[in-house]
Amino acid sequence: MRDLSKRLRGGDFRHAVEAVAALRRLDPATGAGLVPSTDTKDEQRAFQLLVARLVAEGGVHGLAARWRDLPSPQWREMLVSEIGQAFTCGSKKAPSSCCSPRLTIRTTGSRDGP
Image (cartoon, rainbow, N blue to C red; front, side, top):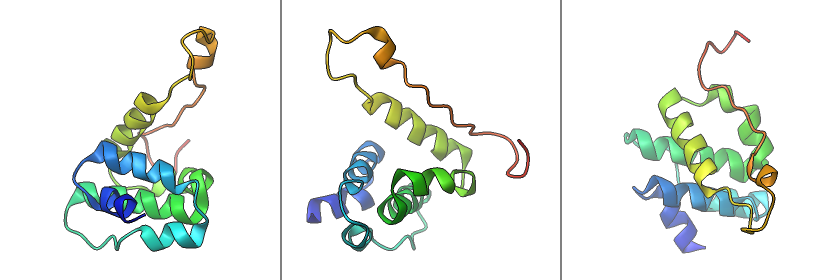
């Protein structure tokens, strides 16, 4: 568990995203206890800790509900990219349709617009 907290606050964005994914398997109280304070001047770490806190407290649904509130379209795009790279079908024999996730997240535009 200590390793998870270390990866969440570390400088490697990919490792932090992997640690966020691991938070989904924990109960909310345990997960939230592993997420350090988001009080940092480092934009990358602040973003990854905010995402970790949202996932720890509300799961993927919590993250999705607050998606438009997340700062920086650049970091949101990087998060989507990391999620996409981590997505696997689990089998080379799986039909190509299983490797085509139907997830669309709008990362640009105003918060009030469509």
